[in-house]
Length: 400
Ligand code: CTP
Image (cartoon, rainbow, N blue to C red; front, side, top):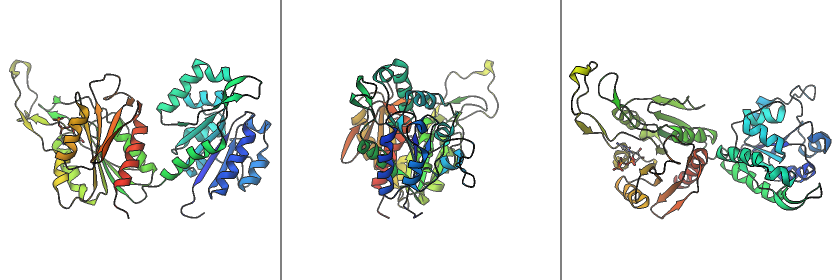
C-alpha cells in the first residue's frame, strides 16, 4: 500500500441497486484506492460476494464470524483501516439502525466502530423514503455529520415513480472523494485547540462562569486527530470525555488557560481559540468559603488577559490563528472588528442570541470571516462546523 493510498470501506445493503455498487467499487479501485467491501446478508441475495472479491482483490466481509478461514474480516480492523466508509445502497432499515446505534451484523458494527467519515447513499421505495420516521432518522444522521447522497427521482424497481432511486454512481464517487481528500490532510500539523468556558473563583466553592459546553472545541480536536494532526486540547471544566488520540490539558481559570496556551503556542502550526474565556475574574477570591452572614454586597472584577490578542502580537508565534466571536447583535460587524483587533486569520462568528443555536445546543449557524470575505453556513452540526473550519484553516497554512 502506498503512503497516499486511501482505504475505502464500501458497505452494501440489501436493495436491488446493489448491482450498481459494482460500478462504484470498480471506479474507486481505478482511482487507486484500496477498497474493502462489507455486505449485509440481504445484499448477498442481490450480488454475490465473489463479484466484489474479484473487483477488489480483497476478502469480502459478510458475517461477524470469520467468513474466510485464514483471512478473517474483523469489524474492528475494518473500522480502524477505513479512511472513509460509504454505504451504497443504504436501505431504510440500515438507516434506522445507524440512527439508533444498533450493531447486529458486520456492516453496522463496522459503521458504529469507525472514526472515519461516513457517506450513505439511500435507495428504497418512494413511500419508505417519504415516511416521517425515515426522514427523522436521516436528519439525525445528518446532524451527526454523516454525508447523505440524496436519491434521485424516477421509475423505481418496484414500479412506483418518485424519489428513492440510488444516486448516480458519479455523485456517490464525488462525495467519497471529498471525504477522501480530507483523510489525513493534516498529517504532521501541530494543532492547539482551546475549549469550554473558564471558572473564575469567588471562593473555594463558588465561581463566575459561562454557558459554554465545550462541544465545539472537542469536535474540532477530534476531527483534527482524525485527519492526522498532532493535537493538544486545553479545556475548561466540561463533562465531556477526552477525545481519543490527543493530549488534553484540563484547566479551571482564564489565567491557567493563558499559561497553558502561551507555553505551547510557539510550537503550534494552528491555534483554534474556541474557548469562551471569561473576560473578568473576581479581583480578590476568598481563601475560605464565604459564610452566608458575611456575604459581600458586591464583587470587584478585574480583566483577564486576552489570550488570542496576545498570540496575535507574539513574534515567535507563527501559527495560523483562528478565533471565535459569540455575538448577540451586528454579528458580522463585531466579528470583522475582532479579526482585525486580535490579528487573527479566521474568525468563526455566531449569533448567541438565537436560543435554538449556540451554547449547549447540537447545532449552530456560523459565519467564516477572513480578510477577504465572509461566508455563512446553514444550520449545521458542530461536527460539520469542525470539518469546514479545518478545511479553511488548512488552506491558510503556509505550504510545507
Ligand atoms: N478570547 C481570548 N481571551 C479572552 C477572551 C476571548 O483568547 N480573555 C478569545 C476567544 O477564545 C475567542 C475570541 O477571543 O476566540 C473572541 O471572544 P469573544 O468573547 O467573542 O470576544 P471578546 O474579545 O471577549 O469581546 P467582547 O466580549 O467584547 O465581545
